[in-house]
Length: 492
Ligand code: UDP
Image 1 (tube, rainbow, N blue to C red):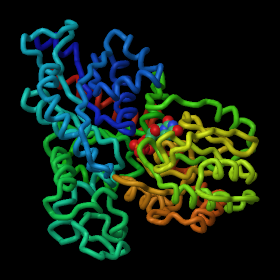
Image 2 (image 1 turned 135 degrees about the horizontal axis):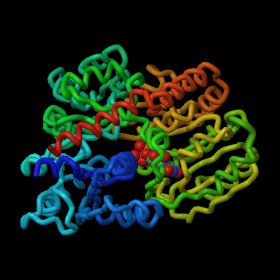
Image 3 (image 1 turned 180 degrees about the horizontal axis):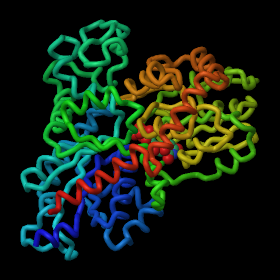
Image 4 (image 1 turned 90 degrees about the vertical axis):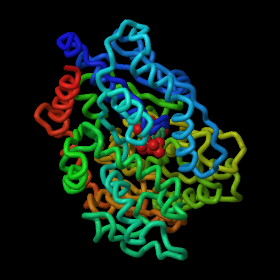
């Protein structure tokens, strides 16, 4: 019996149901399935249907003999408007509505898997889904956590109790956002209040729901068999040594999209929107390093006012000038940009700009391209791209690093504020414009980053390290092989 099980590792993936968390999980799931494991990938219904609609590669994956998707009902009941509270509501709702079904998927009551598959031998749980951990532990199934955010944010979240103890969280009223923060071990000379993960800004008391949520998720680090991070060892060795003091076994296997390519998997692009590939053709006709790529990921929204400021800053950044600019209306922005002579590729998701009801009209001209959703990895790797104006989501940051593209960071929430601090001050591969959104700043940063040789050199060096790390004897590749062995050992 033990021998049979050892031959049949079966990993259940339980991702956090938002865009930024699904692709890294799915990439890892696909890689493990190539290693011969059975994979059950548990999605909420809404997420699964959306992914199926927009990512043809998912169907192919589901047709593989040892790969299956299972779904859970969503229970999306949040009345909160604050994104982080919606996230916490979603997690609570999944716990309330899906625990039973999850338990049954993990260990069927009648002892029989409906597809005749071997028992689940390991759960890879998103670190932000404590229910995935708790129920698996209750059913005595080993859990390995995967955190899809930056290692520096993982460590900052883990430090919440220390920050509370020192009176640094919640922020005092009228707090100076530039004051240094002392409560994150190893980052004392680096972090200001404004650099802590943005979600912590909203905490009103030490018992705040958001603080409790991140605290619970962080405490699970000490209970897990291991932690998987989409990062590579040399990028963050100091931070990783701190996290190892809590969770000694860490598998850094990133950048996952490079590892995936290196191990010849199908490089699927799981996506919530249909990719518009017209921008690649457009990029093909642009000079080398001439285009600013702008994308704020899958969640960030901006007001019409901010959109306006971005627009002006970019237009004035030195690659041309605008002739007319009137009003806040979308059509005016679009026409103004089209007439400006700039080279920009801008992802404008249908839900990016709040308070604008005008239907988006997508223009493409010789010098300007707008798309609702781009094949981002491919865009960043394109020789025409000169810099990336990003919200500093961790996937976007890694993709930019891997492509050797310097960044202008406009973090929106969650880990993005601390990640952008690392981009600007530690890795020195971009500039951080957090908490400002005026045209002059955008203009001067765009001017700087498009031509700054120092930034370009640093990010190229880092890209080389990232690429080396996924090669056969590279740290991420070897860590992946160790992870495979670890999961096998759990099925004995
Ligand atoms: N992305 C994409 N096309 C776009 C914009 C984004 O494929 O037009 C992908 C991007 O490559 C990244 C993910 O969406 O993998 C965004 O994840 P990230 O962690 O950067 O931000 P989030 O969406 O979680 O805020």
